[in-house]
Length: 254
Image 1 (tube, rainbow, N blue to C red):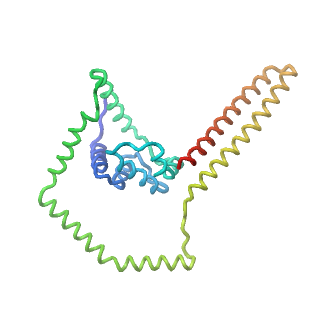
Image 2 (image 1 turned 30 degrees about the horizontal axis):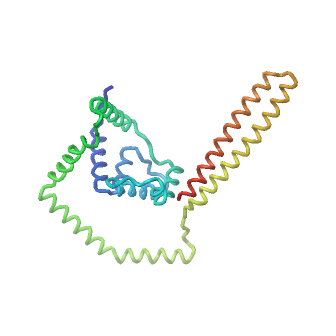
């Protein structure tokens, strides 16, 4: 098994590591978008809040399921609905390589810890980044921050004017805000699942009745086919009810 990670991907993975170290959710999302692991479609505010939550708990003790759902349960539901994350082929290669190295390490040493082995290399990357910042670059960064602060201060009256115009549009009814109500989305999804379960029940019962009738009339082939189709629909019914049960459990936990 051989492969090569392109220089562009290596740079983005390195920048993703730095962004995770800085606990900057916006930078993490931008790097994931550039790597093709996140689709910039729909409402990404739920993704940003979820990423920030996990970054804040990255070095601390991992929160339990109840704590996670209480904090970002609504956002996780929105992510499950939108499905913005993707799994690029490059990530599959990287994870396969890491899992192979970890498997070899555990075989040679049962006390092998990949995190402990990787920690010095991660620290070396951080030290390398600090050394790359030269005094002229530091001065340029300070100058850039000063320019940004000056631009922000000078644009403040324009920002206030825009806020006033926005408020007037709201009062006049010329502007409509889109509000995403996740409770309504969950209720609609639950109703749709229950409706499909009802359809599966009706179809399964009809085919079961048809199978019994065909069997009594001596048409064994048609009867067995009806029984098999009825079994398929009843299986779909059971899966739909399991989804409803999971939604009910999720609503109780958030």
